[in-house]
Length: 229
Image 1 (cartoon, rainbow, N blue to C red):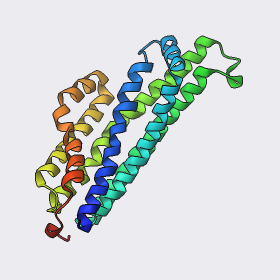
Image 2 (image 1 turned 60 degrees about the horizontal axis):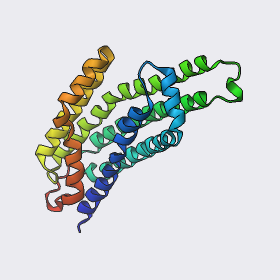
Image 3 (image 1 turned 45 degrees about the vertical axis):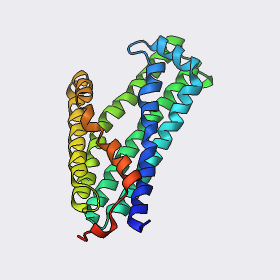
Image 4 (image 1 turned 30 degrees about the vertical axis):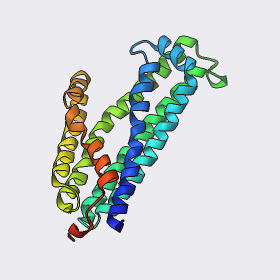
């Protein structure tokens, strides 16, 4: 196996870690959060506290995986254009930082829901309301982060198009994916309901990253077609 193909497959392994995403972004919230009902949310989270904690751990690992992926892709694509590769990593780091902020909101919400010495002066309804605000802030942070989920794909897609050792059609698909995420993120600021609808309508475009992951894992890269900048 050539060095470039090995590097591509390492990046694919990092990309495979993204499969944690639906667990903590979709599955656990569906089991624990009841919109506009703080009491019901508190009851669900406390009844499924272990699941909620696993979700926070998976979200933490997701940040590590995202950063690891960006560095693996940087190593793979820096020969194409080091400046664009650095842009890609920088945008990932911003997104990762925002994800950690979102995670802190969930951790704080669990602390408030559980009560304890620091919250003895607050009645149950007040604690539930505060914790629910923190849960909502976690969602708000992820809503903002949708823009960065798209922006990092723009230099990534551009690098794939220019690379000549990865398929151009995949690079264009990644560029379209990045634009779609950015549009959903911007729309979220003005109308979250419209953003959710757009997310469902644009699902075929979002499959670009799954295809990229599979291509890197299975096919890798063609060493002899590397083009220096």
